[in-house]
Amino acid sequence: MLNRRCATGLLAALAVLAGPSVAFAQSYPAKPIRWVVPYPAGGGSDFLARTIGQQLSTQISQTVTVENKPGANTAIAASDVARSPADGYTILSADNGTMVFNTALYSKLSYSPEKDLVPVTLMGRFPMILVVGPNSDVRDAKDFVAKAKAAPGKFSYGSAGAGSPHHLAMELLKVHSSLHMVHIPYRGAAPALTDLAGGQVNAMMVDLAAGAGFIKGGKVRPLAVAHATRLPQLPDVPTFAELGFKGVEASAQVGIVAPAGTPADVVAALQKQVATAINQPAIRQKLVDFGIEPVASTPQQYGDLIRTEVQRWHKLIREQKISLD
Image (cartoon, rainbow, N blue to C red; front, side, top):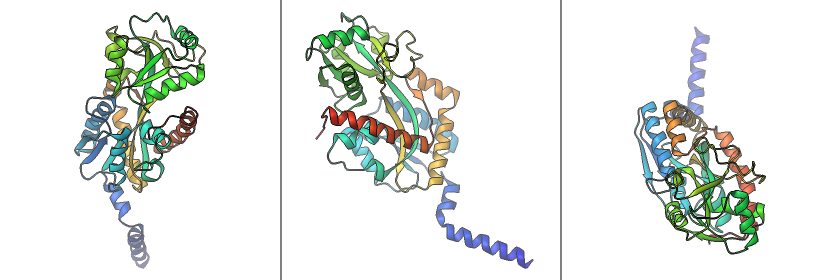
């Protein structure tokens, strides 16, 4: 009897020493989640958050509110979340710009991806596709590279904005193929695609989520995919690797991050619920149909990817002297 009482007392003492975080993690989530998206409503990141958020809400029986907070190449939203309570109830949709590009593009940032934010999961990838206008005389990707190389500075390319994944994907192709082209940044992919369709620019890199309507409508023509494999939605479009352009792989990578200091158990619980939502067959198909490659990685896998991407893209940004200051 005495031993039982001692054991009970010891367990109680250990619970007190462990602090409220253990009990907190076990009860998570116990209230609504605020999900911040650093882009306007209607885009790919917004679609991803709302699609997964709706399923997540059903699973956890809590409201998941998506809040759009665009600006400063995602830095406004990132700073907001970085300064929020580290309790798992405020999360951020973070892309390459947030976690990888911004630290190389800006000399000063209002947040630190490494110090202020913690990876939860990579939700999905938006692979980039090289596209040209419908009246372009370019036959394929090899012909595009040959023509651009033969006319240095004569070819222009659009992007969704300076420092965007679309911009840096084309910079990657430029470096690998020794091309000199003129960059024309736009405020979003849609106006860039409109000018490409109208012949104002020669080419651009675009993700399928943004460009599907233009591609299906014949307003732009896909030449190659900057991905390891062909896209199921564009089975006839080869990868750059198939055409002999090794290393030309680029995508917008969108994950979830939380404020630094969020308990590991809470991060694990959130990751598990989000992964379950992504892996629901209906949700996966919805994402694929929209042009997203579903992922649902672990926090460790997402963190490792971010570190690898930093090494890869910071080198390119430095060498190409790209800056948003």
